[in-house]
Image (cartoon, rainbow, N blue to C red; front, side, top):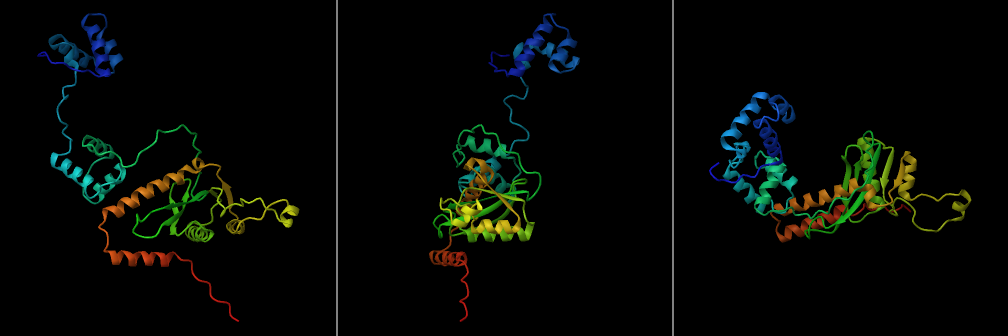
Length: 307
């Protein structure tokens, strides 16, 4: 075909081998149609093409032509401009949602990914190679098993105090049942989350967390009463669970509660990206907001006992 060179795909090479045997008379058209999952009429058309123009004629006719469904060049340039400017630092999934919801574009995540990679825009997060692990099956229904964990992180990126996010995630649906910022991971914070979840969704069957001192006893000290009873007294949070009839399971590794760990990674990425995309407040207003956050995070003072 005019001395041009064509690189055929594996599927096209298979067609060349089968149709060539048909041209030589070594294979019937009906048999070739069954091998290639085509009709007999299509096999005859392909035989005619290969006789007239050779094996390169079996290459796809639309090769090298832009797709009719391709995004216009102006739209592609606008998306790249937003990815480098307003939404700099957003991952592909988050950026696709923003472009669809706020900018009015209609595109898939895979289309956006290819467009960004063509312009040298990689993912802001470096991902490790996936390791083979046998994942635990999800629970059967909502609130049957709830995962809870804390994530100390610079959530405000220097705009305020260092916070710890405490959250409870449903194991069956992945839904966040309760979440709140605190200054640290304490029993008071988890009791606040437990109250929010119970008031809104009811009492779960079990909680799944780590070996934090808030949940389980990590010391080796046994009192005389505990030695006589043959078991240790629970923590303050554990006593609250016993009164509600909720069992607690402690994971032996962070990977065991990987769903809530992955949730923190997503929330850290999205919240910091959202804050970076918005214009920062003035210095005095920023300090005032930070003071308000610190005041809200302080636990309420107990009233003085009446004498």
